Image (tube, rainbow, N blue to C red; front, side, top):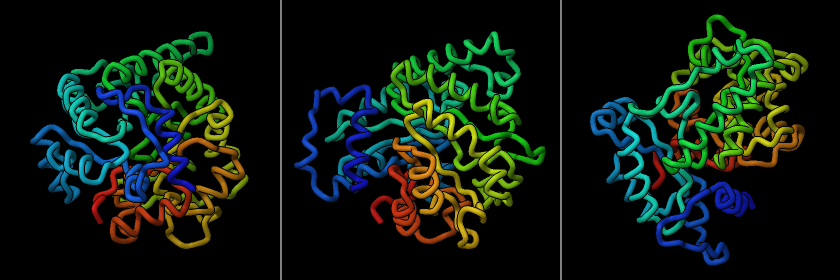
Amino acid sequence: MVVWRVLILNLLLLQVVTSSGLEIDLQKLTLDQRIAQLFVVTAVIDHDEHQQHLLKQGYRADCEYLKNLIMKYQVGGVIFLGKSTCEKQFDVTREFQQISNMPLLIAQDLEWGLTMRLRDGLSFPRNQVLGKLSPEHDDLIYQMGYEIGRQCQILGVHLNLAPVVDVNNNLNNVIIGSRSFGSNPKLVAQKSILFMQGLQAAGVAACAKHFPGHGDTDVDSHFGLPCLQHTFQRLREIELYPFQKMIQAGVKTVMIGHLEVPVLEPQAHLPASLSKNITTNLLKQEMGFDGLVVTDALDMAGVAQFGEPSEVALQALLAGADLLLCCPDVPQ
C-alpha cells in the first residue's frame, strides 16, 4: 500500500525527531493519519511575501494556518518557500516539530545553497558554472553538495529538492537555464551524481528533477504546460539518461514535472505528474526507481488546470506519486 511505503520511507529519510523523542507505531495510525503523510504543505513565513503568495496563488501558507494543518490534519511534511532568514526558519521549524504528533519531513529548494530561499544563507555557484569545471576539479561538486547538506542539517531540512538534472538544450527555455549542468547528458549525469553523493553523505536526501526532463522546453510549467515532442529513442538518449544514472547511483527521491510527453502518455495534454504511464510504468517499473516519487508543486498552472485541488492530488497519487507537494487545499 502506497501510504505505508511513504510512512516507512519518510521515517528513514528523517534525520531528526521532535524534541519529545517521539516513537511512531505505524500500526496505530488511523486512515486519516496515513493519508495525511502524503502531503508536504507550503509555508511562507515572511508576512509580506505571504501576502504576495496569497494574492498570486489564492491560498494561505502562513504560520498560523500551517499550525492548524499540522495539529488538526497531521500532515506529513512542510516545504518552505519565499525568502526568510535562517534564524526565523530554524525557530519556525522547531515550533512545527514540537506541535506535531509525528516527525515532520522538512523539504526545501536549495539548489545553490541556502541563499536560494533564505536572505542570509551562503551562496554557491549555480549548476551552469559547475558544468564548466574540468574533470580534475569535479571533486569540488561533491564537496559543495556535502557542505550544502551540512547546512541543511543545521537548519532542520531533511530533503533538498536538488539537483536539477534536466539537460539544457533549448535556448528559449525560460525556467531551467543556469540551473542545469549543461547540454551534454553524460556530463549532466556525472556532475549531478557528485552533487547528490555529497548531499546524501551529509545525511540529507537529494531529489533528481524534473522527470522526464524539462530542459528542451520553451514554456515555464509554473504558468503553462510544456510539451516534449520527441521520440522515445531521443528521450532515452537525452532527457532520461541523467535520471537513469542517478537512479543507479542511489538518489533517494525523484520529482515528477508538469510536462506533456505524447510519446509516453497518449492522453492529450495530460502532464507527467498525473500519468501512470510515466510515473509508474516508466519511472518505477522500467527504470527501476524504488525511492520516493515527489510531485512538482500542485499549485502550478501546468497541473492546477486539470481540476479541483483534491482531484489533482488524487490523480497524482493514483499515477504513482508518494508525496504531494504544495497542494492548495489539504482539508478538501
